[in-house]
Image 1 (cartoon, rainbow, N blue to C red):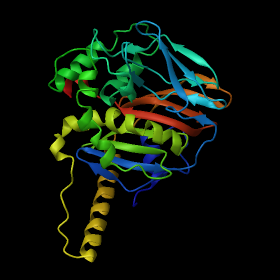
Image 2 (cartoon, rainbow, N blue to C red):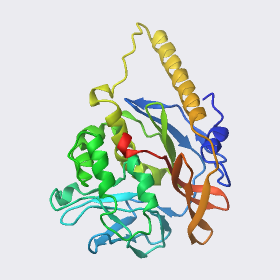
Image 3 (cartoon, rainbow, N blue to C red):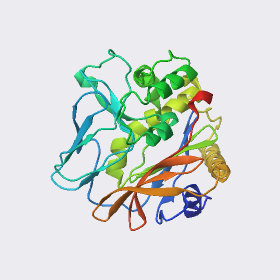
Length: 328
């Protein structure tokens, strides 16, 4: 890839966060969504979110308890993870956190994403998501605020912008459009060894996601590609636009040449898009610590998110562009 990986990522998130050793792969496109795979050094001892992290209970509106059921290792709760579940209101978290092996933690500042009753799914259909990136900066701002309905107005505004009834009911987007959104998972290929990705919606940077290791990233992949970034991509381009234009090559040699030209064009596009991301200082606020790991919130005029570091080395990164739901 004709793009200096270290320079590109450091431009996005300047400061003490080190992304040394992380490499960008060949960009892939599905409609309005472009994903650039990231590979790099794995960080051992982190419990993956689907197989190790469990939703213990919802103890009333805005109170969600998670547990690390693994016998060893610390769990890093994915930023803005949410659960669609049976017989309880659906919630999402406003922040990340550490959970030691066997530990349970009650999140008192969770946000209910289902205004009013109804819409519960059967137990076999329970799954977790990551908040659409259009809502993530606002959700991060509301961490520590104990009000279960605190995100309803923003969800209603997003639904209105996307031509849906203006209710604080995220299931209208996630469950109602799930068959279309999950197509992004099949059209964008998760590579062996991949532990992160850059996401672009249209020609604009949407998010940077890096996991501790490939297993962790594979377990959060669907939640990211289908829901965190797929919602905005679906809105930017109708479902019929998900497929790329077919190649017109008549021979294998011509097909290879077209593939090479297509890859080169995508690389050049990504380089331009990265160069257009606003630059500026990023402020870091430490939120939590576990042994040598540090959880910090990053804020800037153009982006926000949370990162986990070990002595400056990036262990977990979830950083996204700020998005105005009223102008979606």
